[in-house]
Structures are given as C-alpha cells and as structure tokens.
Length: 115
Length: 112
Image 1 (tube, each protein chain N blue to C red):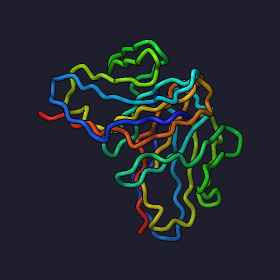
Image 2: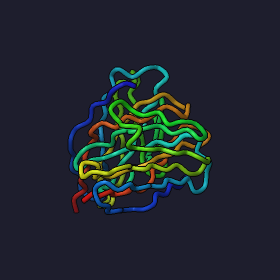
Image 3: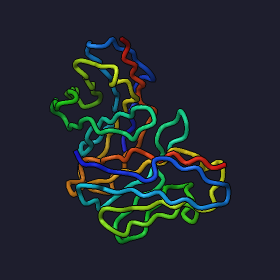
Image 4: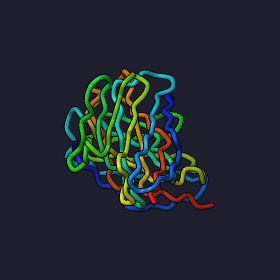
C-alpha cells in the first residue's frame, strides 16, 4: 500500500517556541492531506484539511493562527505549532488521499511534548 | 456522516477468529463502511471497506447485513499483533475532501 511518512517522529520543545512537523506521501501524489491530533486514551480528532496549492480548512475550535498548515506540493504538507504550550503536547498524525479518493493512508505520527 | 456504534472492548484467543461488530443504522445510500485499526502509538492502518457486498482481502473479511445497518469485521486467525483499537467509519465513497470521523472504536485484545 501507499506510504506516508512524518518527521520528526517525536520532538520535545520549550514553551513559547514553534515546532514544524512534515508529512510526506512517498510513492503517490496526494491532492488532499489531513491533520489529526490525539490526546492520551482518546480518539483521533481532525484538525484541518489541506489541499495542495490552497488554504487549509480548519475544524471548528482549531486556531488557524496557531496551527499553520502549508501544502506546497503534491507530496508534502507541513504543520507548524506556533508558540507551543504544554497543553499542545499530543500525538499529531497526518493522512493523505491518493488520486482514487477512496483510501486514506496515515503517517506514523509525531509525538510532541512541550515543557 | 452517519454515526457508528461499537463495543468498547473485546477479547480473543490467539489463533481464533475475531469478530468485531459495528452498528450504523443511519447509513446513507452513498456511504461506504470503512475499517481502520490503530496499534498503540502508531498511525491508523486501513483494513478494508465495502458498500453492500461482503468483501475479503489479505487482512480481513467484511460482512455487511442486507439492510446495511450493521457490519462485522472478521480477522480469521487473530495473532498477538492484531491487538489494537479497531475503528468502523462510514463515509461517502470517493471525493478527496471526504474526511474520516473517528469514534472511540473497539479495543481488541488478543490473548495467548
């Protein structure tokens, strides 16, 4: 199946700093990518939908100025957590949909810890 | 999207079949049933999807009732590595902007 990678797999940062997470589709072109967040013992919550070459669509309650999403190419989307705070500590997961639009492939996730 | 109801947890003996039920009584005619699973601290993994006919692939079988109001995911010979949270999701087929809405899923524990 299609492969989606994320980098880094884990990151620790200090409160107030910004962190960038990359999501790449390795063997297919992804016109649409999604970003999810998952807190411990909870399910995945969709944060935003990212379409190549256009602005991301954020879910209700997600601050677009805090979680900056860029989808500059068909194989790369980035999520930047700006001015991170401890409550932003979470497991961030991206996914990508291929040209068929039927199957959504997920990355391995990025564990963010803000101290 | 239609909502789904799944048991919170299930246990299965290694080597036996694991049957995971899902209720989706409000499913629409254009919605497919998708199954994903998430092993601890990993991203979700696609398993299978179907509309109304039973489906089978190398990972599992999907049995959908005739009225499409429920389905069962079958892992024919469960192994310890199948221990994961299994999510049943309904969404329209195709269309890259159709997002997946994850519920709480079923924690399947495969015991030796």
